[in-house]
Image (cartoon, rainbow, N blue to C red; front, side):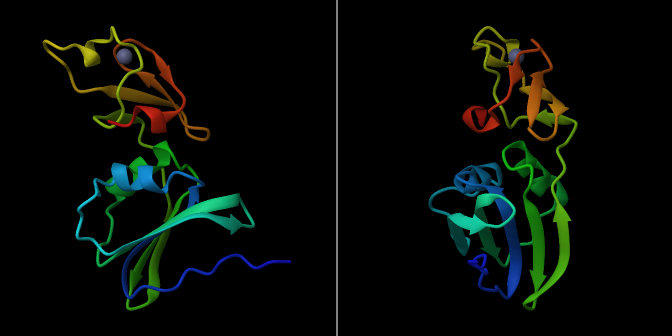
Length: 153
Ligand SMILES: [Zn+2]
């Protein structure tokens, strides 16, 4: 049996493991890490996972992600695990939890929703209906969003 790919260690920072395959770049987007970043990053996509079949991994050096940052990842990768690394040791390991209310991350699929209005747009707001699979309901018009990756702002 083939072994799972072992992630080469980093000295300090955050390793996000068990990301839904294909979602690593959306994870970076949610974290606000865009092209042109000077962050030291490794993005590993579609590696073999015993648990998930395929998965993505993101390693961010010299940055410890805060809980409110990582929980947003659950929108698109509900199985993700967060490892905080200090001096090559995992000092904290946790799962992601979807916030009950999500503001300013997703846009509503309904073009007539007040959150999509051109004149006086309001900050989009969604209520979490289900955590895994992640399903959200627009606070304003009740439109359901199931594929959050397509509606990231
Ligand atoms: Zn809406």
